[in-house]
Structures are given as C-alpha cells and as structure tokens.
Length: 248
Image (cartoon, rainbow, N blue to C red; front, side, top):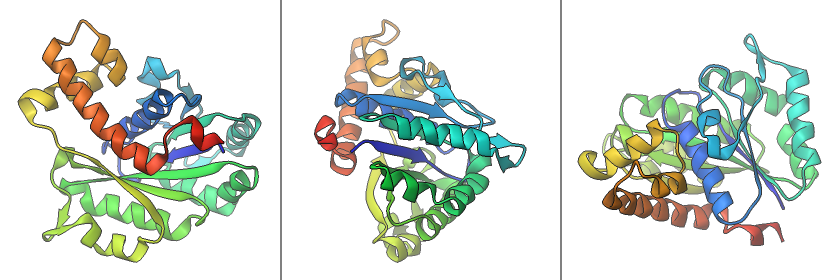
C-alpha cells in the first residue's frame, strides 16, 4: 500500500519542510519510490532540495483553495501506484487546506482508493509551543481517523515542556493519544559541533547523503551527520515502516 504523507502545521518556521525532507530521504533510503510536492505559497523551501526533485503546486488562490489545482493533485496521487507522496504545505494554507480536506472527504477518498494517509505535525519548544499544540489538536479532532497522525517534537528552539510537563503528559496528547500513531523526536544538537553541521546542511539545502559525500564537510562533520541521520531513521523505521515491504 503506497502512502501519502502530508505535513500540516499552522505555525511557520518550526521545521516543517525539514521534516518533509526527512520523510522523503527515509523512504528513498528504504528503496521506496517517492514523489515530492511543495504546496507552500509563501516559502517554497521543500523545492530547494534539488536531490528530492519536488514539484511545486500552488493550491491557494488568494485565501481559498483552488479546486482545480487541488483536483489535479488528487488525480496525480490516485494515478500513481507503488509511489509514496510527500506533500509539504505552508503555514498560510493550514486552515483553508485542512478545512478543504475535511469538507471534501479527501482522506477517505484516498483510503478507499487503496492509499494510506499519514499526517505529520511539528511541535516545537519556546514561544511557538502553544500555537503548534493548538494546530495538532485541530488535526486530531477534525481529521478522519482513517489517517495516521505522527507528531514530530522539534527541540531546536528549546525543550518541549509546559509547566514542567513533557509532551506525553500534556492535555493535547492525553486527549488524543488514540489518534496519534507515533512520536518522533528531533533532538536539540550541541551548537559548536552537531548543531553547526546540521545548520550548514540545511542552509545549503542538502540531503544527509549529499552532505556526507560533499567536500564541503570535513571527516568528523560527516561522522556526526551520519549519527544524526541514523538516530532519526531508526525512529522513523519504527513509526513509518521499513520501506518496500510496507507495499506488500
């Protein structure tokens, strides 16, 4: 069963495109054919990863979803068999697109056509914590239970805590734990070593494999990137599955 991965979060700048790139890299690493789509009308970061060959589709017409463009995207997904889609959506399109998906029963349509739908939402520490938690709650309560919901805890901006409560102790998780199929942690890296390496890789819009084979990174930097990649991919194996065998 091929999968449709949707990144959805109402807060910008929380690492959503990075998560989309990680999903695409993970599936490609496991031998799964991948088609990447960038629908962000403001910041098309996903398209800047040349190795992922993401196509750009602008789903919004002003503040509304353009039905023709959305229908084109659905047809593209439905026509492709044996391919995982990774679709990165912008923060500005979060409310109109999520509402449109619900109103048009798009998830149910994809599932009835034999696709598995996975919705990914990023939670981040710092000032954006409450806003990202609110968006997650919206997805958990409004989206069809036929879609898996994966939470990414991005610690780049700080520990994800609310009054000393960790994520799984928070109200949004406790009330929606039956809807959340997995949690993946993007650990905060030390600034002078791991952190610098990751920031450089992201600024150049390189995949892990590209950075590890690039002359722009020294030997120990490459080793640190391998460690980060392997730690993330191990979590993703457990939550997202392990490649081509998922299609059997």
